[in-house]
Image 1 (tube, rainbow, N blue to C red):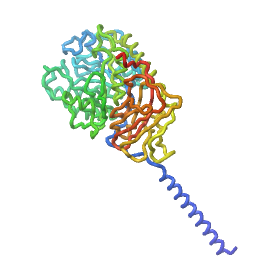
Image 2 (image 1 turned 135 degrees about the horizontal axis):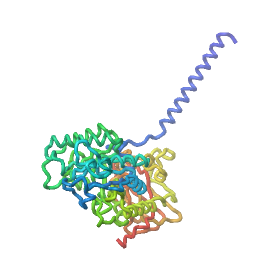
Image 3 (image 1 turned 120 degrees about the vertical axis):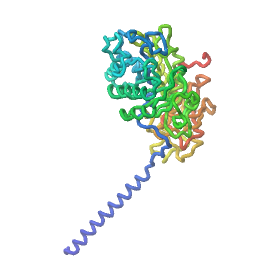
Image 4 (image 1 turned 90 degrees about the vertical axis):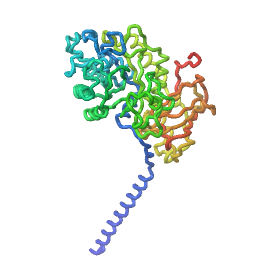
Length: 494
């Protein structure tokens, strides 16, 4: 072969390689383009911290302080620190009780309305430093933080009451706000990571006029701890549900307009309870309620019945909220045995009800699915272990006439239903209904992170369960569905 021919052959081989490479690249790009993308989110969306908070579902409050020793709910501010002496205080017991109940976050009343501080604040002598407990060297906040660190998986939150009935600066706007901010800084710089800070507008009718500089407080909180969630009537991260019964609205949106909210405004409780489908802010609701009639421990009181706690669970966690359950330590500094027992019953009941998903026995199909078969958005995703980032998505972005159907050849017997949305892409569902063999057994509006139903007619039996998503903001995205048997639910006995 001549030198010229050899060069031509070499050039031809090189061109063939280039052409083959381009064809393969085009094929790869073409195949890549054929993989369907996730649907666009519908704003507003939760932050990373809000998502983690929502997934906790149950958190615990510890109301503890001088009120524990005076048998009162609201202290006067004139209590002698000498009365505070919880000789058997064991924060490890508190945290263990919380963890066994399923709570991964515990919130302490670092200061309640009486102004008594459970840490040795350098800005006041009305604190544990002036008490006989540990000869004035105790620090309840530090003990709780240490216990939480020792029990990995448990986080700490703090409540610092804006209303202070002890401090002379209260009623003087500038002086008191400076005092409050100084104590806030102490708590957020001295004790490590704080996952929730709790603010409220509680104040007696005869309290001095006082303007709280909430905007300044919130700004400092975020400056000191950027991953924290701030709770108040107006957020900015978590909102009050509007009552202390532990009940969210039957309709409950995580979205709301913060410009319509203000802290301590009793006229907006209904709006707080339901949220707003047109809300521009992601501000999910927290349902606070005490295991006892009061918030502080009283010898004369007993914990709520198991049936009541389960009702609260269904109407809080089961209505797209987080349940903040208060469990007050007693004068010894321990959570009382009767409360510990009730919490164990409560956790055991929840596990009994929801640990088995009867829907896993069923064949599942849907009205359509995004991208067709094997695209990753099929109805089988609602039965996997990921309740957030894998989900069923319908194929045509319709807001109506979307459904998931489950067929069980051997039949099913159940009385509780669970539906969850992929809220990482926004809250969408406005109206839905559940049918068993063509008969409606449950219906509702919002779903959100979790919607739970206990069927009013009790246990039902059948073969075909169909959930229709009748109206939504964009296409509904369903992350999980469960059919459960609740042996504690006896509607005829309620």
